[in-house]
Image (cartoon, rainbow, N blue to C red; front, top):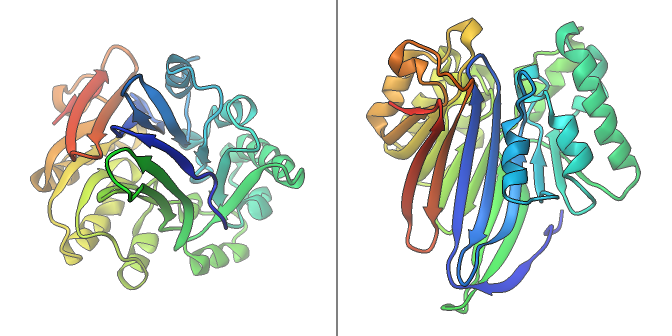
Length: 328
């Protein structure tokens, strides 16, 4: 797989912004932007990971429109659960073109007729859209598995000969776990979950989707992470099923993270307070997209957005909570 596009234009400054979007009942989406702001603000690269909408509100699309983004560079559909999928068909239809790298889990399109009843209709529609794009040979569709480099960019610097490097790797799903699904009449959706490692000049982000024990257990012998992680999207809405990921980080010597963030899944009483406190003890900042975790009451807006902005050159970090999001 080649480089999607090599940005050779030189910049004076460089920022990455991550918007974690969650709704008060369920749902998760991530928008990330690479920006230069001098002499004027310019978005160099934009990406979306999953989508959700509720009661006619789609904050991912609202944010894209607020930044005047008509086409994104990167779209990842991590797995076929409704709370990561509703509304992603609109992004596929309206915000992608032949220059968008579209990432889906390995073998999901092939096995989509085995999805559970409550997700099959929605996800088959998404899978059909992706398949049509792929079949035109105009669209850049990649079926991800652990260990793949999905994005490899260079951005020129006005102060250095060496360009800034930006990479995205998939660290799941694992082929043998996907292979086990071929014998199942109904798929275990979270086994397909794509987790991503984003590396940007020594600033490292992990987006974990809904990975659980069987995926995380495979990290020990198959995945090597950077020594320092600046941002962690906590797996599976902060469920105890994902606690093994925290154990894996500890075993890898990654005991301090600058930022950890979670979304919610109210019907399952997620996130787990004890798990969030474990992350909080290891993180400089910990956020949740619903203030209920702190106030015992749902926020009034129905959604929250935690925003992290990193000055890549100076490695300084700023934070913001929008709507119902809260810092623990």
